[in-house]
Amino acid sequence: MSALAASTGAVNLGQGFPDVDGPAEIIKEAVTALESGRNQYAPGPGIPALREAVAAHQQRHYGLTFDPAREVAVTTGATEGIAAAILALVDPGDEVILVEPYYDSYPAMVQFAGGVRRPVTLSLDESAPGGRLPREALEVAASDKTKVLLLNSPHNPTGTVLTREELETVAAFARDHDLTVVSDEVYEHLTFDGTPHIPIATLDGMRERTMTLSSIGKSFSFTGWKVGWATGPEHLVQALLGAKQWLTFTSGAPLQPAAAYALEHLDHWPTGLALDLQHRRDLLCDGLKRIGLDVTVPEGTYFAVSDITDLGWSDGLEFCRALPERAGVVAIPLQGFYDSDAGQHLVRWTFTKQREVIEEALERLARGNLTR
Ligand SMILES: Cc1ncc(COP(=O)(O)O)c(C=O)c1O
Image (cartoon, rainbow, N blue to C red; front, side, top):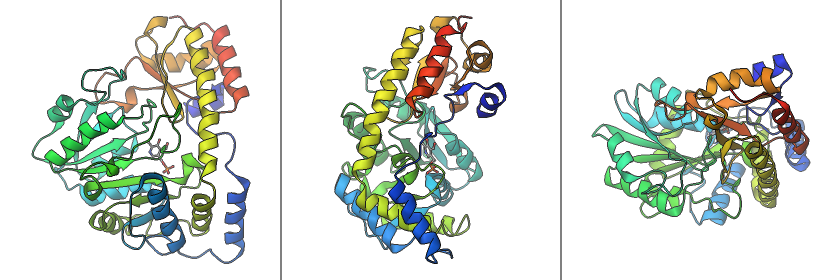
């Protein structure tokens, strides 16, 4: 869809990356590291300063205590964290529960590991009985081969932030089935309207069975840096490092001191970003509603999802392919994020773009011919 945007000159509200860089002082730290000889292999688990900054971050924000020496690992973005976690924990034939719509690297990595994915569909309706991830749906996906549950909240692509009650349901399910939870929390600081992000590792009995993944990309608008981290009990983090050894072995040395600096000194920055994103979310969602789309207003992340049926469409892919020509805008169809056909009529739009870009896209959509 980004290639389609480039070739048609459409405004790209598809791929989720910010069009403004993160703080200059973090960039300066990276430049200093580059210029002061931090250019050779870093230790495989990450430089001590970053591991310590990650442990302090988890303690400060969530009251979670991790030993930076054995319970924190630096990864090449959360993407490598996901890969290494799944390769470490999933053997051929093991089953992994994914919440659909899912981030696209999850099914790919389950397949690399020889595992079998069992999707559970996330409801977009917060008032759904039993919550958006009800216990009955989780039970249907479980078997005696289930090893891992992969969770993502705040959630890409829907912007859902699971409530404490919903997380309690997942946690009880994981405990009862003795599952390891891999929790992708890359949008941990990007929640809106005071919605709290609650790491599942903070719930009763969950610290010992949860591997939590995050990264600098979303929180500090450096998606191209690919510096991430994993926290969890020693047995999980050391297993992840066993797989990482044969993936990248070690992650970008000069970016690690800069990431440590960000975590240590710039707690206020993601908070400001979240507030700014909240305003841009409102701009986008109000605009999409005005042109007749049924939008689920997200509680976090970079993305909002809309239902296209009110405009006479039933297939998101068909809609998104037609959109550049009809309106000069690109969005992403959701069906690729599902095994089932529950996302056929859904389309994702990003609001992690400057206001002018979103305004331009909305004007184009308002002028365009969107009805099928
Ligand atoms: C849910 C989710 N997990 C992981 C990632 C990748 O994170 P990183 O850039 O740190 O590898 C993304 C990026 O879009 C994402 O949306």
